[in-house]
Image (cartoon, rainbow, N blue to C red):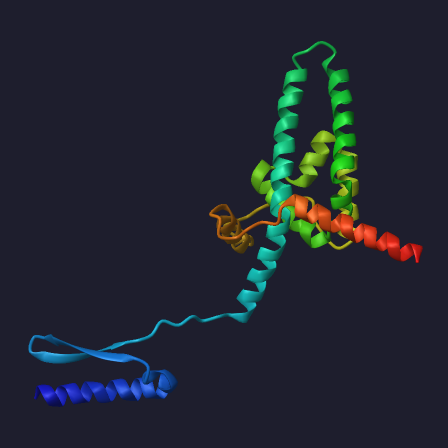
Amino acid sequence: MYLTRTLFILLLLNVFFLGKAQDTINHNIFTYEVINGDTIPILKLKEFTYKDPDFAKQWRRTVFFTRRVYPYAKIIDSIVTAHENEVAKLKKEKKSKRKIRKYNKKLKKHLSKEYGLEIRNMSVTRGQYLAKLTHKNTDKTIFQLIKKYKNGTNAFFWQMVMKVYGGANLKATYNPEGEDWMLALVIKEIEQGRIKVIPRSTQKRMLESQKATKKKKKKK
């Protein structure tokens, strides 16, 4: 009776697996376990990985851009923090408005000189990722930051420029529970050290090299 039942179970297993995974059945291992007097065959299946081509493509894209803009998002965060602290300190001094204007003018000149090349060569897609990471780090959109540190007209102007030239949105927000769930996963991998970002110094050297190459070609 036990033998007949065992053969019946084996037959069912073979019908099922030979019909759906005949190419792997020979590589699996049968073990047996006795339960209440019945010998039960247990089939141990090999682990396998299913790859969704659309998911893989989107993942590679997200990793590619996040690795490149992540350092700049951190820089923006540090600049905003330092600016807030300095302005708060200047507000306590005499002639604070004049001093703040002077400080902002000096900061603008420094940022333009230090990051001008990188900003001018940033693609619309990178800008979009940077906008989301900036919102994540500062809780403010790039539009809000421009409006706060410049004026509403200036922010509105840059919003329109970015929309015309490629569709980037300076009002972009970071939504890890919604459309940015994959970006959130990549950020987590970066923060846990499993994905390495590309340092700003490396990216700047590449841009400077490209600029030098273009100059040489123009001279020829």
